[in-house]
Image (cartoon, rainbow, N blue to C red; front, side):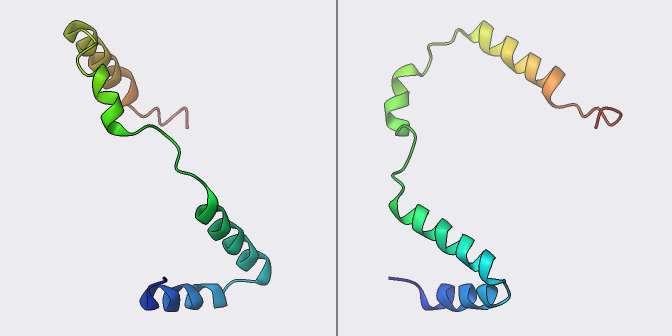
Length: 76
């Protein structure tokens, strides 16, 4: 069942869109209603907890902090 407040807001937004975009929204809603969830349940990943040695985790953390948290303003 759809929440009346959500339905009202959706109608307000949809009324501002051209028919072609309204159809895209409808297609997206249809896809969401039939698409099975993807991925793996988090509890099934617990078996892997602790398998990476602490030294390797520290290397990963250092690499991420050194290389991934910087923005090259000239390169953008």
